[in-house]
Image (cartoon, rainbow, N blue to C red; front, side, top):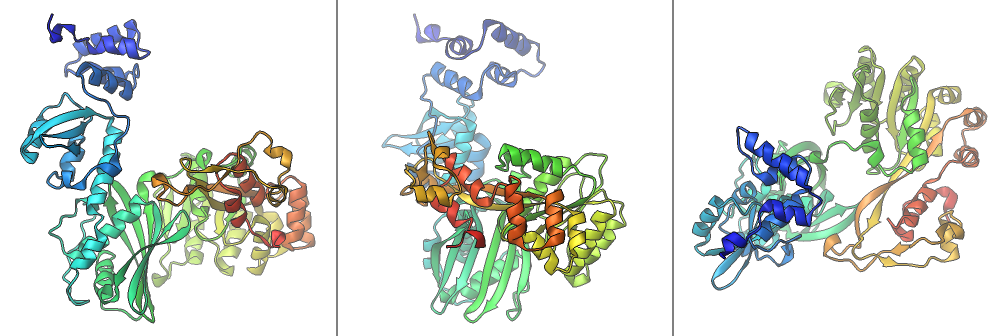
Length: 577
C-alpha cells in the first residue's frame, strides 16, 4: 500500500487530536460543498469555531509530515538569512527563513499548502527549502524581531558617519512606510534615527532622551518609568541628528535659540506610533525628548485598568452621576489620561453629548467632540472651556486643571448641571482638596462640586520568567499596611536577575494602583471645617478608603510586583521615615 493511501485525511486527524465531533465535521464538509467560492475545510472549521487555529495547523503539519513549532528561536536566527528577503514578502506570505545548512534553508510557514511563495524563495535564496509549520501570530512576531535585529546596527551606522555635523542631506520621512523597511542605501543619519525609533518601540520605551554633553551625545530610553542608558554618539554628529529629527517633526531647523514642540506619526513593525517631540536649547546644544504613544493599542476598558473589585464598583457608580467634578490625580506619566479615556468610553452612549479639551488629544474617541489646546492662537483651557459650555454638553473632560481660571470655570460648570472630568498633579487623593484651595476655589464650592478623587500610580510588574520567591519580614508587612495573616498562603516574589524576556531588567510592563476618595457627607463636613490634607485623609481612611500603599500591597500579594517597588512608588509625607 502506498504512502498516499495510508495518509489520514485532515478531518480524521482532527477527530483524533481535538474536540471536533463527527457531526461538526459533516456540517463543515456540507458548507464547503455549498459555497460558491470554495474554502479549505480547515478554514471553515476555524470560522465555525469547531477547532482552534493551532489545532488545525498541528493536524495539517502531521498530515504533511512536517514539524510543528509552538515558538521560534528568534535570538538564534541569523539576520544574514533574511538579507535578500524583503520584509514585505515575508509579511505578505507569513514566511521566514530560520536556519541554514550546507544544502538547505529551513523556513517557517503558516500555510504549507501555498507553494507559490516557496518557489519564489527558492529563486531568491538559490537553494532547497525545508518547511516547518507555525501559527501566523508566532511568525509575524518573529518577522518583526528578526528584521529589527537586522536593522539594529546603530553602532555600525555611527561608525559610517564621517561627514561634518550639519552638512548631511535629508529626505522626508514617509509617514505610512514601516521603519523596518529602511534600506542600507539610505544615508547613515536617516538610518540612525530610524533605528533609534525602531529599537525604542521594540523595547517598549515610552520616551527617548537625546542629551548632548561636552564630548558626546547620550541616548537614554525610559522603559516602564525608569531611564536606561542606550548608546552614545560622538558630539560632532549632534547637528545632523537634531536636524533630521526636526525635519520629520516639521520644525524650523534654522532656529536653535528657543524651545520647539512638534509631532511625528510613524509606523514600526506594523504599529502606528504617535511621537510628541520637544527640543530644548542647552549649554551643550539642543536636547531632544520624544514621547512615544502606541495608537494601535486603542483605549483601554475600565475592567482592564487593574482596579480591585470594590474600587471598580465605586468608580463605575461615580462616573454615571449627572453633575459634579471627578478628578484623577498623580504625577506625570502615572496613567491619569489613560484612566480618563477609559472612563469616558465607559459612559459614551448616543444620548450623551461629550466634549473634551486636551493638550494634546492623544486618542480619537468615536462619538466624542475633542478639541486641541492652541495657546498661540488664544485657544487656552479657559477659552476652550467657555466655548464648550455653549455647545450644550452633558459631560466635559478637561485635560488638566492648571490655573485659577480653569478651576473656577470647571466648578461653575459642575454646579450648573454638567459632569466634569479632569486631572491634577498631586501626590494623593486628599492633597487634591488642598490644591483646589490653592487655586482659589472656596471650601463650600469644593464640598458642593467635587464628587470624588482618584489618585493613581503605575508600578512595574515583575518578569514572570525570572522573578524569585521571597519571604518578607514583619517590618515589611507593617510598611505595606498589611497584616502578616494577609500574607498567609500567598507566594511573595522579589525581582530576579533579569532574562531575555525582560531585557535583563527584572521587570516587564506596569500595573496601576489606585486610591479613591469619595466625597461623602463626612468628608464634606471635614472640608468645610479644615482643608488640611492629613485631616481629610484620616476621615477617609476611617471610612474604609484603600490607600495607594495598601493598593500596592495587594499587587504584592497577587505576585505582580515586589515589596521594594511597591514602597518606592507610594512614598507620601504620612509614611516618610
